[in-house]
Length: 482
Image (cartoon, rainbow, N blue to C red; front, side, top):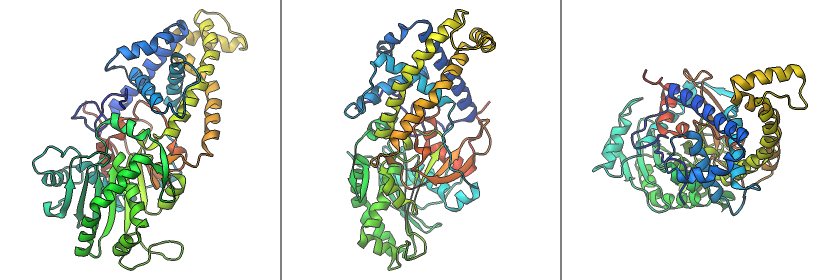
């Protein structure tokens, strides 16, 4: 099933040569998105009939350049993906108005970050910055003559170049197969690791479609059906290569690495490996696995970057000691699952009524008249703002009513045992307030408010694998060229 969002590659941009996100561009596009969004809503306030034309207008626009139109087209496609479980209670034109109000609300909400702070040095001591390079290096190798040599060349590139020998890449299937992502197995001799690197989906349309899937019972909990099935196939494919490298290098541990859907698959792989007693015994070499009765280091770990939401809370907690998901600020993919989509539909439905309640007052203010229920002093300020910044005034009026709609959704979400999250513990990369400079890094659990879906203008760019590499290696994104 296709998706109405624009085609995006693994770097989160349009086309095939997108670079990592740039702070100045991010800020400028954020301001443009906010302005366009308020403009759409003011049009609807002034002309209620405009909303009725939105679906037809969007359908006629093949590849919109306006970010608001792109997001509305995406929402129409997403509604279709979850139509068997959740459908809007309002008709599509009114529901799209609710989506616009939700987008406006999400603009001012920062992604929830865990409280426990982490220094960049601590993150790099775990080797996650090198893992990010491996996750990035397996992309775009399908059509090259020698995929292994191309992978090695990618690892040698800036930032943080690493020297890997071609003969240390034991296996590399550079192209995906049906239900089976591309995968490589390699020895990272400097870190004494056997790496299983799973490539993510290169096309954002496919990511959105793949993630809007059902959960099923899996390994003592629930997991995303296609991601968990893909993990099982990949495990069967790479198992002997991993064991052969282990036999040659008895002191090496195993680490599964990936970005996007590849990160979700890597997390599932680490669970499968621990649950396979014979395999785990050969990796741990007779040493008891860490747990309640024994201490020590995990010999099977996983690290994902922008990993897909693919396992339920019970499995997240099981994998917490040995699996990590790194999330870059507003990245949509770790937060995208059927339940979160359903939550957004409920929120947008609730906000339709919120908008109707505010729109009548807004129309009166735009005409220079006083709506009921406001004191004279406040109305004077509102009338002034109606002339100078009508979009800002509309947002002020909506802000007073929107939190209640969000609270109702949160209460319903808490009790869902099948809700899916990205695997393991969370390492969160939070953008600086001013857009440029060092990031704040914190850690916590993926089964937390950080997993709530926020639809923000940067949600695709923040999914860039190149962005993950730069933040993990440098601690920040380089400023855009002037």
